[in-house]
Image (tube, rainbow, N blue to C red; front, side, top):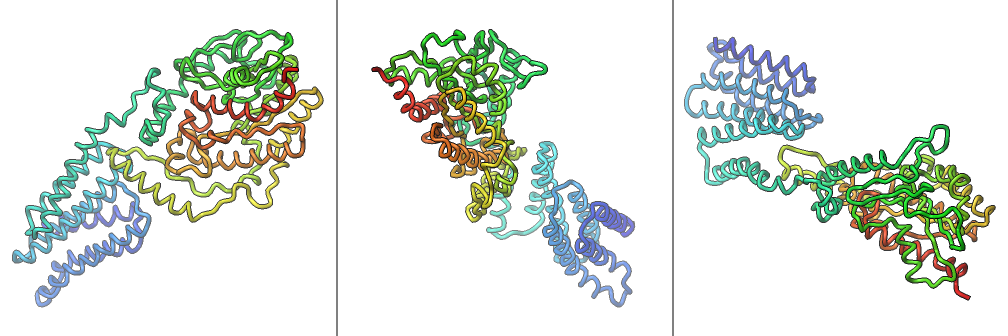
Length: 535
């Protein structure tokens, strides 16, 4: 009966191994193990002692072959493999029961424990890497049970006993410690506390916390869009700001004036004012979160009034619209912007138009940095992520990727063509033009773990955006060199790559808006002095 049960267990093991497509070496190992276990029952009486003596070394050799083949074959953590190891442990245990003498019984039981440890480890790993809390804790209990059996069934020296005790305490203590610290890592996002959670330092570099905050932030933006956007069928762009509408972004009230621009009411005529129009995307419109936050065009107007005496009042109109690209801004110029009779247009475009950079211009992305993976034990997940980042950084430092590939033609891209159209429009309408480059929370010099923190925008997208932004800056600087009448504004000083001044990859905190406004003021100050200096 025992041999029949053992044969069934081995047959089930082999069939399961075939079903999960184990490599040939592993199948061969299972075959040798089965032969070692069944050979004593088939051996003639005269050779029984020799066969029994050779069975245990053959079993260990077969076991090592199976484990080695799995380790070298891209082994996946799955419960099927744990079942395989459990069936094998059961088949070996039946042979251990028939061993003669305490020494041989102990040696056979060691093989049983080895396969049980293998089964428990795989079960634990499957629950961990698949982020299945129930499976993980079941594997944890199984591992504790096997270690306890090993502790009680075998004689250990001081070093071995200490090692086992340490492992048992670690397995028991890790979930307890994780539970103690878990509430600190679970971010309760509320409007009154949202100021903290876009901060890398405040979130302690935890990308999970940032992803949860960004989910809330996105829901708030969607609600704002419902309040202030409307669809204009048959026109480009088809999403437009609703004149006279009101909305709220978290704690910050947002109003759209009767002409369809964010900010206070203005008249269609200039009435002697020096009018500046800020063209741009959501980064110009302003993703302001707190009541005292102001978009950079509004801050720029305050800076000009405070630091530059002028013979005419200066008015800065915020013509930024979320989701708009440079092409959308060009489409609205004749209808909405030129009737305002601007004296100066400031263009702050970037991310929404990166799709207009040809693939042949952008350098290859290379491998993406590791993304944070949620696990049943957060402390272990954090440690795993740090190790993967260290490995990525080691290889990234050895890899040099040019910002712009050799032979690329950035000035032949649709993005460059759109900027030329803007330059021509400003020239023919006798409007001064300032082209500002784009700033982001991270750049080529940023630490990979900081880039990963902002993975809500997509870690791979972050790397792609950084390289696209380098090409974008190059286009603007070359266009300004080709057209001396165009003012190039470098917004990068004290802003680009300084992640604490951003609420995500591209949008600014209040401090970021102030820094951008300061950089733009410094870039256009000469123009303003020429046009507005008192007599």
